[in-house]
Image 1 (cartoon, protein in one colour):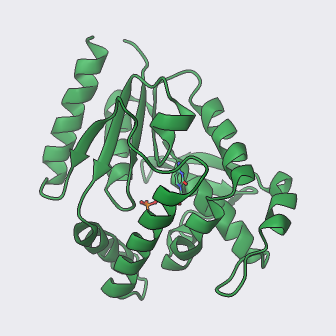
Image 2 (tube, helix red, strand yellow):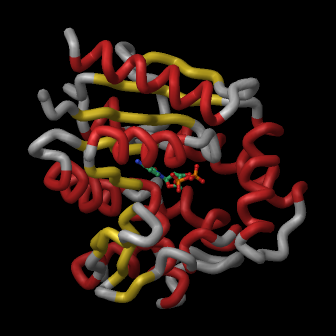
Image 3 (cartoon, rainbow, N blue to C red):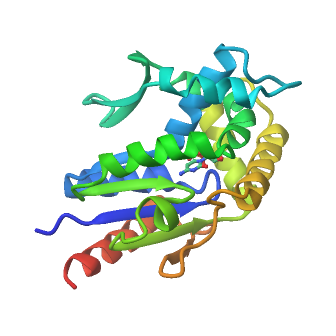
Length: 229
Ligand code: CDP
């Protein structure tokens, strides 16, 4: 069987990672959460006082990019790869609303993007990969055999993310989550370097009114059609 590259881009909290994990599992492909890598750099920036609510020392962060080593290790109990920063598991730490509040600012920096895109291309060079993010079909793998662009209404997305965070035991309000979703959409689509935009050849999917099963079935069919081309 062919080992294709599947690029899934879209707005925040559109369920990209959920379906990407399902598809990767079904085909025995590697799943790469590119957003986790931007979150890991952001977490590093927070821990080293390069960013907080009042300031952002981007130059300082850029100067230390060589000290940031991001890796993934498959956790067979969870069924997906967890993210490590300099060999420390930070999978839970990067999923907070606080990290979400800073990540889009960090992701605007070209030097950060260059480093992460290079690593992403290396991870996917042999195909057999499902990667989700904002620029996968446009910048990281412009030649991907299948490109999807996911969207849903901001309210639907905020509701989903709010439930996720509550399940993880975090103290957040729906309003704060909605505000973060909207703010990130704005920064991600308007930044100069690799803005979030649908690749010309990407298939658009609005999953506002789709169940997880319906979404999986639809995308599974698209993957099978691509494999049988
Ligand atoms: O899962 P969620 O939709 O909240 O976002 P994510 O995939 O974890 O990505 C977090 C942030 O990283 C995004 O809002 C973008 O600012 C940035 N990002 C990016 O710029 N490029 C990517 N390929 C992936 C994420």
